[in-house]
Image (cartoon, rainbow, N blue to C red; front, side):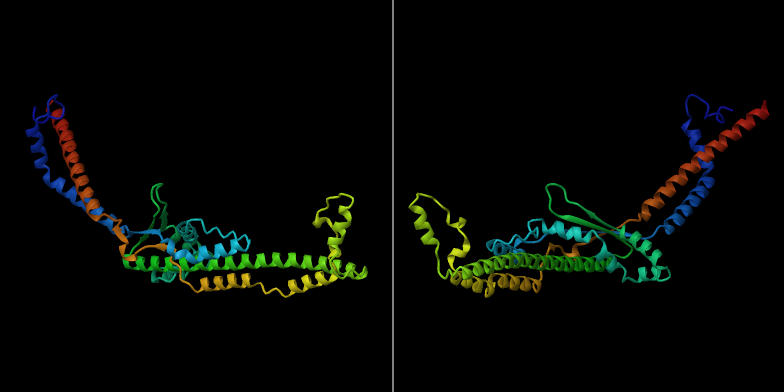
Length: 334
């Protein structure tokens, strides 16, 4: 009876314990096989997805020489163009990518997506595409770094590479287009401000010319006014004297010059912007062939855990069964 009560003794008889396990090896093996099959079935239900990671870095400053040149030209002409070129081009690129528009356009062309969404209505298609948008994650750099990491979960690494390449190309094109458009719009806005100022100036000059003609003031009379006033020791600023005293001859000439201005400075800046539109800009640096792909499903780990779990459950089952059987026998002998 001592051997049968080894689980209840203060000291465990390891040899007896091993004998119990050995005698129940068939049960342990069966339970382990069942656990292995369960793990195998679970593993088959997990999709075979890969985590595809790509690093993007800031582009060289030489890529943005034209941006800087246009800024200098605009500043030299006292036109305040707030295009925020000083903002990190890498940050602007990532902000454009984070709206997922380019990514969803790229992923929508894949066979898998087309098969999944063609059967759905428009509303359900949008929901489904939003679910796919979650597969893309952009990891921001640490304080001491400048590079971003793009993580994309997909079942086929080669297809993932193409999707990312298309999405990044579209992002670059859209960002370039938005900057070109903003440059043009702001320049046009500044042109309107300039033309409005000159229109107001022309209206004022026409009024002053009409007054001068009414008073028959042909030539400049300001010097004469200054001379006459000096006799009474008055210090009068020339700008405070009525403009029509300059004479309608000079005023009409000023009107003519304003109307005939060619605005060559603005035309030159506009030409530079048009040239920039035809220039390809590399906003970020990356090599799509350096994309890393790691299988998310660890089949070996799942099956190993299943086998170990089966062994543990099997051993405990044999030991508990033996203990219960020992108690039953003990009660019968009493």
